[in-house]
Image 1 (cartoon, rainbow, N blue to C red):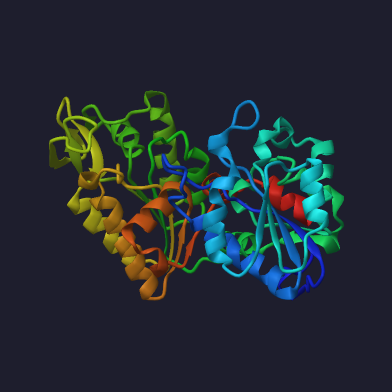
Image 2 (image 1 turned 135 degrees about the vertical axis):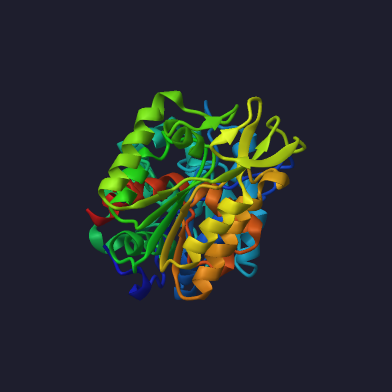
Length: 398
């Protein structure tokens, strides 16, 4: 694998896999630029060296070929903001004659963005012939798309086969993602705390089992907390429950006890009479939620307790919100956790936000610049922390 930082790309053409799978509003305008901003330093380094860049990405989940709403053309104006003095070409295909003509004629210091890779079914199949065609766009292959590193697709894994170890590597973002995740898993200063939220226990089983072996404390919130509370005999009203994972929850609690890892569950909850932004709400005992009511956020006592533990920690992982933070009335618990993370980081702790909804929550809180690292990859970071080998990383190291 090449040393990206110390490689000169003067007069070289780099085909770069980025993750520009960004949210668009009803007017097809980018509403969150985090992933574009994350890739910008890698692109800029190549341009500053005197090289040119061909950008490959997917956007959304098109089903049967090209769809206007999933065109990467919609992000060109946002991308241009990060490179105001750089000409950006766009071609509405990625392996057409026009695409190859554009890449072959690309001048040093120029950018070319090709159309959505997933307009071809071959991309998700990891097709060899498709990957070989993509590889023709550059002399070097740089993967800076951590958000897709867990996918064995043509552009994320297969394509790397067509470049030797001196001509393929990670960009700054991918390298930072791997470095920060490894720091959390293998070089963490104690006490180490994980905050795990989200809707379902089933989505986090492997993560929790891995974290039990590494963490001093695990703070559980979000919808998944109610399956644990039910497993301990609590009354959860109409709160989210995965009845088929009651035993899973019991096993996780037993394993934590065996490893002397402290698992904390909510003491109180903000319960609602229905799932709506304007629902009636009240603070209730998390183990005695009234019939007909559902927990949608951790309560103030729990937020205070979790905050104390977070502020006393030296290494912290956050993966999953504490409640339905999209509704202002049920966002307080999530934002209290975000503030505690910022406070701990300010006092010298290392904090890693594990992508996905957690990244959205820290951004919405306005505290993203006050934590150590915000991952751009939800599913990829989750699988990395679970201990899985990610195809996009393995392909570069091979």
